[in-house]
Image 1 (tube, one colour):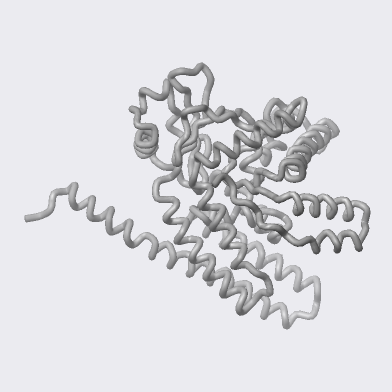
Image 2: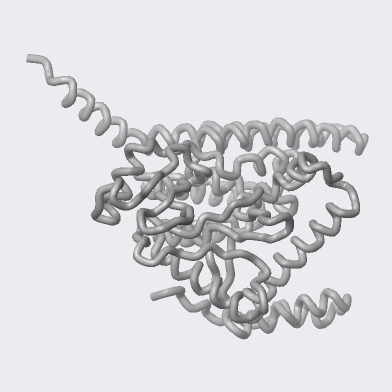
Length: 373
């Protein structure tokens, strides 16, 4: 007698869940080896070319190819690889071609269906979904590797809120991804590069585990918000306010911030008839940079507790030049001796004092205290 359709579907889902990590690992290794191999081939080919300009052109072409392959890996596998794209999409860490491609992956993760979102919210808050919200937008305003954010309004409120909901199963998949990345890092360290990549992936693993605890994130957000408030007549950046009583490990409700992602700032200026390369735009950009610098300077050097994930997707521009800093899943705490050494390092570098710079780098690091035990 054939199994009922519901049981067949359940069996398929269970088998899919069981084999998904293996399939994901296989996809990663095939793509990673392809990218690595193409660079090794280019390295071999350029070794036979004497003309420097020709070699540079060959490398530029390889970077374009590598960037496209890396973009495909990160966008199609998602999860931790979107995090990796955010890290690599910085000019000081990757070739220009990679930066241009990977920076576009902010908030590009596949979204969780609304039915699943409702289920997560109801389980976390032990209430019927319709008892909590007056309205809840079906389409998320953004979806990243760990969670997605919906605009909504609570029954007891007249203002909109942002509801951050974890993707079910994301934590388990990320642990699979991090193990693969660590194995690849060990391979690169052994055969190709003289850099401790493995320690970097271990630090990433620790931070990712923190990011799945929204209660911890809420405490971090409130701590930074309060610190910047009391340290200034007006906080240099907007930090969303957490909604009391609407916090759980997998769902976080906070003030909704309306703004333009910083990477879209130039196009938004153009829409408003402002020349992105003009004087007015330059003044606005200078104010934005000043506010961000002040906020981070105070967080790092004064309090020692700071937002540690300032990629473009986490920075909004509101009310023309006001800066909002989002997503406090990654925070760091810096002990006083390290803060002092860092301050001395910055001053020494500004003064072009090589001796003091070296002395600042030799400071004995104390143990960074764990956050929120």
